[in-house]
Length: 423
Image 1 (cartoon, rainbow, N blue to C red):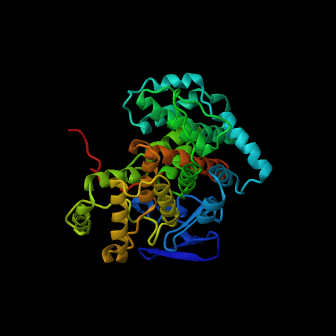
Image 2 (cartoon, one colour; image 1 turned 30 degrees about the vertical axis):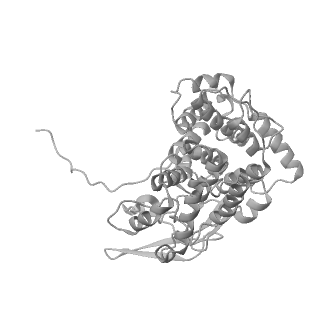
Image 3 (cartoon, helix red, strand yellow; image 1 turned 90 degrees about the vertical axis):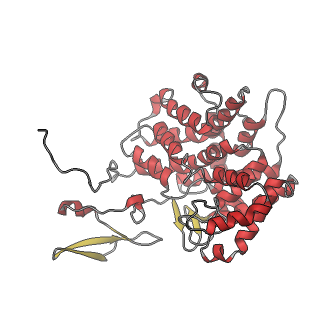
C-alpha cells in the first residue's frame, strides 16, 4: 500500500480512500471502509473490482502478457511440461530435478481413484455430458477422502491439491469412456501426465493407444496454456466457495460447474459447432457479413477476448502447435480443418476484424487441435477443467493461507417493493 489516496466527495462530505498498488498492473482503490459510511459500490461482473490480492498469475490485456509466477507463458510452453507448471503455480518456484522426481512420483501415486467411486459413474445415464459426470464424481470425493480435509492445515491442503491434480485426468477420461460403454482404462505410472490421459481416453483392452510425441506435446501445451488465468469466473467461484471453509472437492466441483458455461470454458466447443454450421468455405463470406451486422445475433466464436485487447499470447503458441498437428496427421486438406484455416486467414486480413482487434484466440486453435487429436467436442471443456485444476488448487490454497481471508459476501442494489403490510 502506498501513501496515495483517492478522495470521494458525497453531499459535501470528503472520504479518503487508500490506493493499493501491486508489483505489476493498475492500482486499486481500497473501498472497504465505505460500508461504515452506509455506502456500497456497484460493479456488475466485477469489471473494475479486485476481489483479492494474489501472487500467482498476472494478465496484462493491453500488452498481451500472461505470467505464471513471473514467468512468461511463452517460455513455460516451450521449456516446461504440465507438472512443472503445476508445481510452479502451487509452490511459487519451478521444481529442481529432485523436487520434480518426488512430485511426479506423488502424482502417479494418487492417480487411481477409490474403487467405490466407479459406482458413482454408474449412476449417470450413458449419454450424460462428461462435465456433468465430472462435477458429480469430483464432489463425491469428499465422501471418500474426508480424513484429511482440515482446510486450515497446510499439509492437508497440499494432499488434497495433489489428489485433485492426479485424479482429474482419470475422472475426465473415464467420463468419456463411460459414454461409449467401454471399460475403464487405468492410469500407468510409466507415462507422463499428458500421455497418461490420452492413453486412458483412447486405449481399450483390445487396442493399445500408440503414443505420438508430436501429438502428446501438443496436448501438453493445451494443458499449460489453460492452467491458470487470474481471477476468471471459475477461479473466482472456487475462491468464493472456499471462503466459506467448504471442503476442497466441493470447491473444485464448483469451479468445474462454472467453467461449463459457454461464455467461459465452452468457447472452444462452440467454435467447432460454429464451423459445423458454416459447413464449407463458400459460405464464409456470408457468416463474416453476419458477424459484422449489428442486428444479427450471430457472433464468430473463437475470435477476440474479453481481457486481451490485442492478441491473446496463448493463441500465437497454439497457432504454431495447431499447424504442427495438422501437418503431422496430414489433415490440412480435410474439409473441417481446411474451413478453419480459411476462416482464420480471412479474419486476419479483414479490416473490420483488424480494427477491432478480433484476432483468433486460444479457444479457436485449441478446439481445432483437440478435434485433430480425436477428442470429441463434448470433452473439450473437460480437458479445460483438467488443466485449470492446477490453477484452482493454487488459488484455493493461497486464499486459505491468507490470514485476511473473509467469507465472500457481495452486496446488492435492491430494486424491489418497499415494505408493505398484509391487509
